[in-house]
Image (cartoon, rainbow, N blue to C red):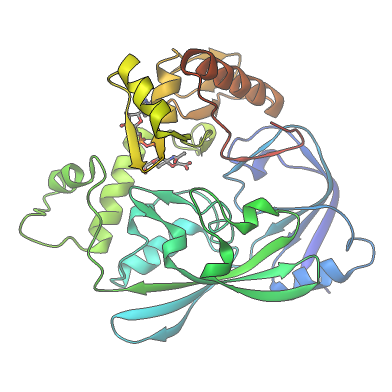
Length: 348
Ligand code: EPU
């Protein structure tokens, strides 16, 4: 028996953190790399369009899904080498991201702690190069193992081949091509912690950690980040959401300077050469959307960058709200903002 199960017209309601109703024409639950290879070699399924699902924390189903939805659930963390200060880990795609963070900080490894509590699976983490509080996952990735649907081979992509950028990678640009099966990380015990992001030092101080006198342990930083996130971002277990719905826009520095003349309080960061980044959350809040609700689709009252499902909103209703938010930001500030999660079944 193969290591996968297949269902037709399967409900996807519980398969995304937005918890909108949707159905998959075919849903495959895959429990091993062999199961995945068997499924993809099957003549009935090999040529079907496929959507790969981890924890469903970074997508919006805006309609029913044609073709195959492949839910990968193979877990596993293995130490490939441990030289004392430096270790290489191989983590299977279905492992939960936050479980990996907890595992690594408990062993004294620095690196992943600023990304504690990000929802999602390890296999999804390189796709949009997840990041938070001054760190991005790509920095710690040595190799990504992926099934290439063009050649039907399992390939090993080195860090440089992944083209990591802000919420971007080759996997995001060609989602039909790659199915990530495992990720290899390099972590070390000596790396100084990153405490510069607003609120991190203060939260550590509130936990009784004096950062002027001691170097906080990775587990303490992870705990501080978890507290910060919980105070700022709505919990997807309590209210449907996919984290930031929009990316922070990059614009020409000259345009950012002109905007700052008109709106002196507007945060501008990452000002490097010709490019500057704006805070999409600030732009959205200053168009009056924070806490807005239309039926069950809404903008979080905790963080304006997060769209929420108060109960029975459809994916289309959330997408419609997202378009209204983006249009009003453009009208007021002349800046285009773009969605961060993958939108399935509709185009932006
Ligand atoms: N802000 C507002 N109103 C809001 C929210 C934010 O004005 O409702 C302004 C404030 O000025 C604040 C600034 O935006 O100082 C930055 O806010 P925050 O620190 O929350 O960061 P962000 O840029 O809004 C990014 C990531 C988050 C990540 C945080 C912390 C993106 C798209 N989002 O948000 O990632 O947790 O930084 O590092 O880059 C995610 O990707 O799903 C996600 C939650």
